[in-house]
Image (cartoon, rainbow, N blue to C red; front, side):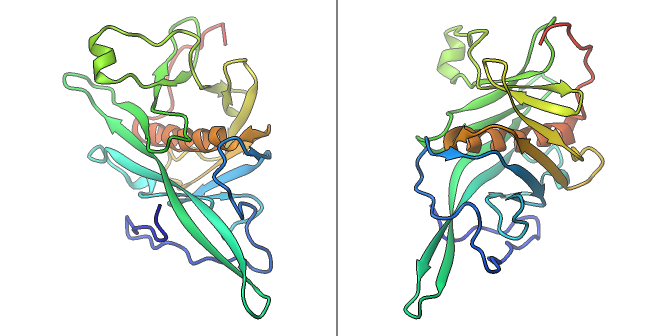
Length: 241
C-alpha cells in the first residue's frame, strides 16, 4: 500500500474533494466478502468514480487508457480506500490510501498479430490472474478465465470450458457482463474509448462482494483498453449465449 500515487501521462492526481459528505467508499475494512451495493462507475482520465460522487475517485489507473499506443504493456490498477477520523475539534478528517490490486497487461506473443489482454493479481484477496479469451463458435463474446502459468501451459493444461469469472458480449444496450450462471451483472454504457473519448460508464446492477467488484471494474478497464487498441469485436454473432 502507499499513501500517494505516482502521476503519469501528465495528469496529476485530483485533490480529495469531499464537500460536506465523505465518499460512499469510506471506512473500508479490506474484507473481500464485504457486499458492495449496485453502483454506476464512470472512468474519466486515470480515475474511476462511483456515482453520484464525481469528485472523489474510488479506483485509479497509472495511465490514461485512450492515450496509449502499442508500446504500452502495463497499466497499474489501484483501489482508493478512504478513512474518516475525528479531529480534536470534532470535525471529520478524510484521508485515502491506494491499494495496488492488479496490473493490466497487453502482450503480443512472438509470431502473433493479436495481443493478449490479461490482468495479474497482486493481492491474495483478489480474483487471481485472469485473461480474456474469445469464446468458440457458436458462442459469442469473451470469457474472463484463469490465466495459466508458463509451467501449466508447457504441461498442456487447459482451462475447463465452464471455468470462468465473467463473460462479456454485445447486448441490445451495449456490452454486457454476466457470471457463470448466466446472470447479467453489469452493462457498459456510453462511449467505449474507440473514438478517443476518455469517458466510459459501467452500470453494476446487482450486489457483489468486494472481491468481485474490484475484479469486475479492473476487467472492464482492461476491456476498454482492448477496445481502444483493437476496436470493437468484428465477429459473427453465435446463436448461443
